[in-house]
Length: 271
Image (cartoon, rainbow, N blue to C red; front, side, top):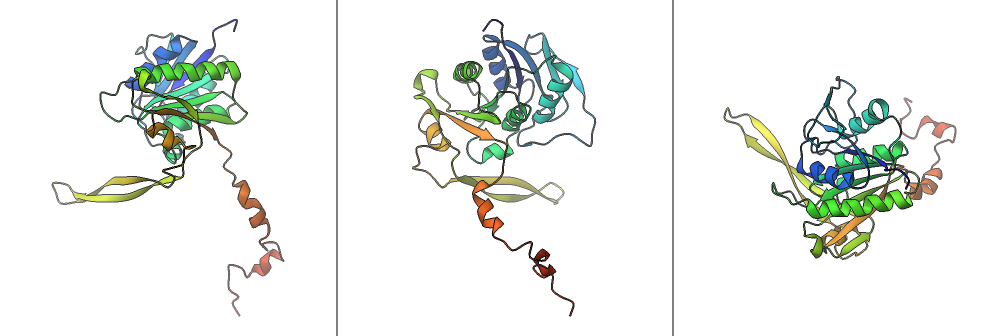
């Protein structure tokens, strides 16, 4: 490369989180960095955007780079704001994270980290979300930063397929303990959830969401869940086209257009 690439950095844990600090330091080695991240934690917001409130953009100096900002919005808001108001051109790479906790399997749907990467892909920017499988306060992001560098360099060198971003999950290990990087698919899993009912001091009920992660493919070695649980970094290509193509032939056989289903398919006649 004749010039250093322009790298947009965001996250969902907030502008001062340890994960984004590690990611900024990693990306400084390979490109010119612009940071825009939420001014407070936004975990679990998915692909939410702010439409019923104002957005406040503030210049910050947490990461010692020329352009860094906090935004009173979601991770997706951050990407949109960066491309519309901050950057002079489309970035060469958008990186999101490093998330404090897992985004394997179905978690990708709820993740603000990954939604920022998806938004980048929608805008035609090669994008990737990084997550460390460690929820502890003292999580060590040093190995994650090195992994992020490896994958970011590969994206810049090789590009990504159109309309695809990457979901990267990293086991909570030292770099020397990680077995390698494994390209895989999203595991079939879900959350068995319940709302734990509790009482406040005045006796009024409130609820706390709890749940258990259920993996239906424990032995499948081509999944992201298997990879990280066996000390590999998982890399899953993610697309934002959510069309269920396999279902199209079956739905096309439905008789929905026979005299507009004679208007009796869902509504009973008044006779």
